[in-house]
Image (tube, rainbow, N blue to C red; front, side):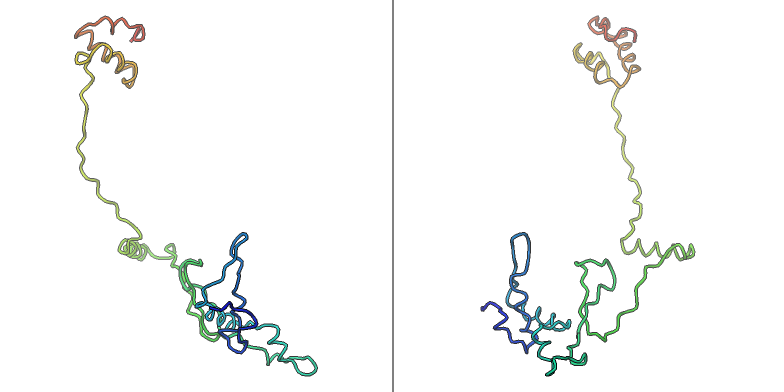
Length: 199
């Protein structure tokens, strides 16, 4: 496919006249972009519909004195209508329409504060129905798992001393374990450990 150049774009055809403008467009740092040749006719037509003309086309309209009457100037045929609803964002597409096509009535979001409680409840119900709001799910019954208290008699001396130092939540638990040891195996390596003195 030929490269669109000003010299080979027919200036009398709107879908060709501006194709050469779309060649080697700035795209990024030290990069350029030329769209697929199948898109160029539509892009050229869009530029023409928006009322843009090359200076040579305007110059050709001048009379022998070099004047151009405003009535001779080309007219804009299409305009861009932004998205009617939703975010004004490039991913929320608008539409190109004729210059005389009327715009739809503006859309406004209702303010719940100006509605009665009954109306607000109806609005909330619609929000639940459409999934915007989620109803609170009932909490399922859960079985609770409780661990049996630490019994020093079931463990070695090293395990009991480790539990007393790192596993016990507080001094009350340490005192309970030491009391159980006194009533049970009475192992001196636990009871006489200086770390538990005073408990």
